[in-house]
Image 1 (cartoon, protein in one colour):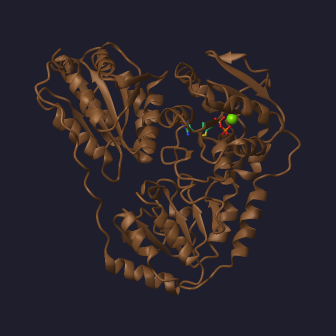
Image 2 (tube, rainbow, N blue to C red):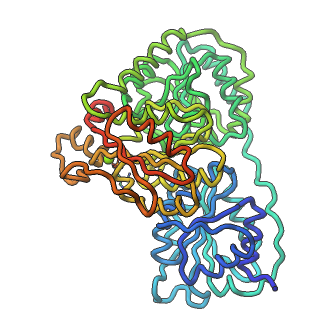
Length: 535
Ligand SMILES: Cc1ncc(C[n+]2csc(CCOP(=O)(O)OP(=O)(O)O)c2C)c(N)n1
Ligand SMILES: [Mg+2]
């Protein structure tokens, strides 16, 4: 059978390392889906296109190849944007395909049609239309662009008649993506002098460091200089947090304790620090900053960027790691005492079943190589500060985009990308209500993922923000009548309720060895968030 353009698209995407795509179909999507079926590239049906794009974002992060999501035009495209924005601000390689009307109909007042190029413009590196005779080149450009630093999403519009038309080209693979820019030796020289003259420098590692080809060099630099280090939420695990120099996460629960330590320092070395996670001015105080990254920092006037080393982070980190030791400034004992006090403060004694207890149970039961995916809310702050991450890419969250609804599709994508590794998902009850339809995907795919729902009956993060601003609690309660037992199942996924600190252990152990997903609803009392979150 002769290839049509949809078959050709599948061939080129496969050659680009893409193994599956997430999405929701319509009639216009069917030619592409049929080509995927024929070409051996799986189409994974999700409940909502936003989840398809979140799943594609996480596929991109874990596989290093662009994740793929697919939607119909108009409302399919607008739904998709919620997840595409995550790949844009959190920086993941992603290809988003919208399957649209026939070419001659584009731009007319017709059912479901809107201007996709305008819709995707602010959240993608490019939006392109696939046209007859130019399929391979457009896809090659899209894949290359998605994979070029800073990586990100690219949108492709596929008219239905173009998909069905006979292919006029032959597939050929995408070449290597262009190398990143080099760094400036003079800039490194100055950085080296600054480091040598600082008495109490600290490092803060940010999300861009997570995309380094070789993260060991950063660790070598930190160890050689004996730099106590913090990370942002996304950079957790880049260096095992059990490291004696690790001070944990900034700007999450008990953030003021972290700020106090940071403001004792006389030089902050930002490594791969991206202000999209949190702006420097929020926590740096008056301490000067040495910013080492691909790109210049976006800062408020109040912040002193004393110097920048810009360019390929791998190259800069290798050069930094070669610098001679500049002398001890901090005692390891001080670092240890701060870390212990911080961890203690995150776990206030409370009469009921606290979120921090539920989170600790999950941590204790997970093997070293596990992946945690979680969602956005007060629980994010708590998890980011109290969870010890041991390895890169085992701690999946959106921080730049910070969209509720990330957790469940992230866990699904992680388990599909790495089926042999345990994956656990923790979500707030508000996020769960937003995306619980995706449990059906986990069931269809037989993914053994425990979904731990922190059932605190509130949009707790927003409730805490109301308290901080002396507003009344209003419009933030999820269940007024309190908790009743969970249903036996959600879309066939078994659900179990746990109400006290000891109980989740058994439920989680059972769920981890099940041959499909399980929902564990932990009925927690969110009272301590008022102390630990946004303190
Ligand atoms: C799409 C989207 N809508 C709204 C918000 C604002 N928001 C952030 S956290 C949150 C509450 C989440 O509630 P829940 O999942 O129960 O988590 P909790 O705060 O209770 O831990 C809201 C509404 C957001 N980040 N994303
Ligand atoms: Mg909640």
